[in-house]
Amino acid sequence: MSPFTIMTEPTPAGARHASSQNTAPLVVTKTSIVCGTDFSEQAAQAVEVAAALATRLDEPLVLVHAVDKESRTALPTDVRDSLCMYERAQLHDELERLRAAKVEVIEDFRAGKPEAVLVEAAIARQARLLVVSSHGRQPLDRWVLGSVAERTAEAAPVPTLVVRAATPFTEWTLGKRRLRVFLAADFSVQSEAALRWVAWLRQLGPCDVVVTYLMPTLPAIAVFDMSLSPIVAEMMDQTDQVQARGFRRRIRAVLGASRVRVRLEKGWDRSDAHLIEVAREERADLIVVGTHQRHGLGRISHHSVSRGVLHYAPMSVACVPVSAAVEQPYHETRLHGN
Image (cartoon, rainbow, N blue to C red; front, top):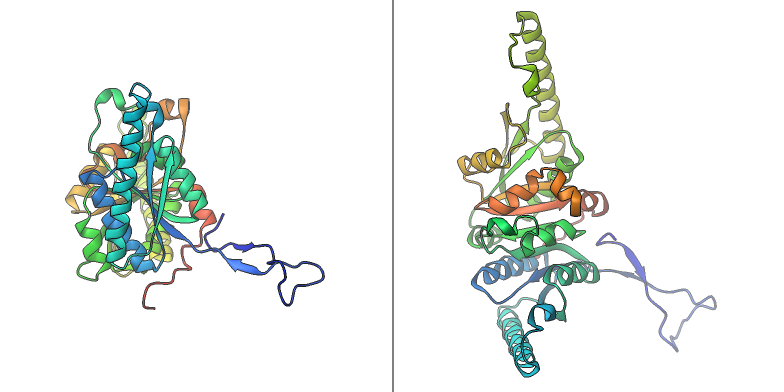
């Protein structure tokens, strides 16, 4: 559902001008920023960013904590109850701290797997963005299952921002610096989703954007034991130039020309490691990737560049599902003070 979808609510009983046909009044559903916390140092970074974005957008921050009861079944009942009470008190203290900083914040404390709770909260609260923390690289045996951040990004119907450092975002929302944004793109629907989200992000504050074009290459089997004739080589070069020009036009149409640079990459082979290395070279604060959100066996049988970036990148990562780019009108953004 779009964050600007018009919802209907029942007319209150005894309303002075109730219609004979019981016509319901129209109410505009307000969007929110949803952020998960487990009260760790990493989660504190995510909360800081979520609060800054919520303030900038003049929208409520929904602070979510999940109690995973399944992981505590071996504990005595009184210990489980004590832990739950302690976590609720921590969440209350965090809410009070944010409210003292003039942040509109809503508490969401519920039982369940963290990724499931976060997705449920995002849907229930009409989230524009879901913000989570990263606990760094996971052991190799965690790769198939993934971290909470990875599983959340795979399931969330809205963009998920995985925060690894808060300072670039907080300073950016205060107008103290530009945000350095990096994305790799081609002509796919995933890239379109990422581009549209970056266009929305640029409305929140000044960004320097580097878009790397993943130029298609010949399959490996085609280049072994084979030398291209000058004519074929020239035709391939001309084709590359035509594609590059078309790509630059598409970037200008979505992002404009100001503070946007297109970088061409050949021989990419859809490598997440290559993408991360280029992002390092560009000193990116944020990598933005579009995703199809494959699950189960599809996750194992298809190499996902977005998942590799999310798992290994040292900078923050935003994962934008293809469906969100279609359903959410990012251009309809009202900023605080505007």
